[in-house]
Length: 334
Image 1 (cartoon, rainbow, N blue to C red):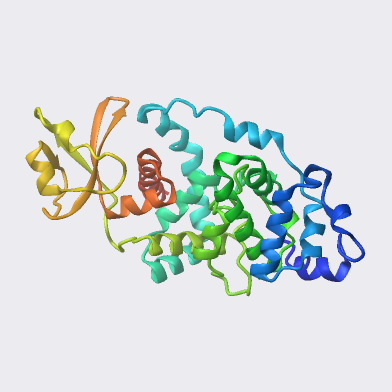
Image 2 (spheres, one colour):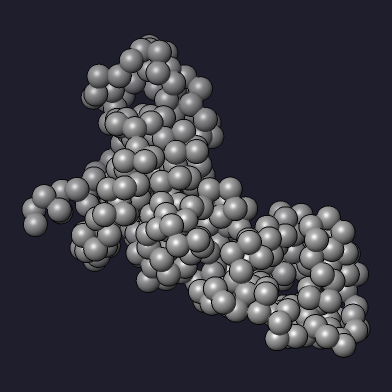
């Protein structure tokens, strides 16, 4: 991150600022856009930005049709667990995860001590999201968020909010907004935080005065742990429990959505019997997966629900959990 070439540097160097009129400053992609003008006015009025500075910034922003094509593309058919799991549970991802754990042992130990989140789950999140930083996205975040904020009406309010959050975080961290890259939807860094999540949960875990989740694994590790803690992670708690299910009423126990709505005792009455000893009054998420060897029945426990706050998907949370378990096993073998 170009920490010394942020907003202050842009002001000092006069990049797109002094003597530039509004008409000249707006890029051709957004020249005359009332949405951009309205957004600049809002940021100036409500958040203390200089309009000339923002206009100079938008002069460098490019509308990306490829992003609009990608986000508008019909969603792929949801893969069954037997096909989804092999995407994330691979020998390469396990081996690289063990290396990442070893290289950043001190930061992971500190994160567990401060937030109660075991190392294997932090490593697994970063492994699933970006292959430990190997694929953090190649789109300029400013281009991605602007394109979606101003040219994708179905979710324009969401991305406009994220664009606002992005500009505020780059000002706070004194980073050049144009320099940062991420996914086509604006997710950033090793843990793929959206700007609003960055501002709410990311932490300066190495104490250098800046939060850098793009190429500082220590800050990324602390930020994932912070996110989990703030979303209810229970130190020492399990994530999921295998269930033996049978009888005519088992489908009545399946959770619709992700929120835990039935207790272990209520589900037992419907034919769900956990393999682990769980408190009768514990609310759980109950789900069935189409595994390689047939249907699998599981309870998602409170920490499972926390993982789904990161990505609202049962299979995502299961992939993180199982990768975490395999990382522990692989470290033991070494």
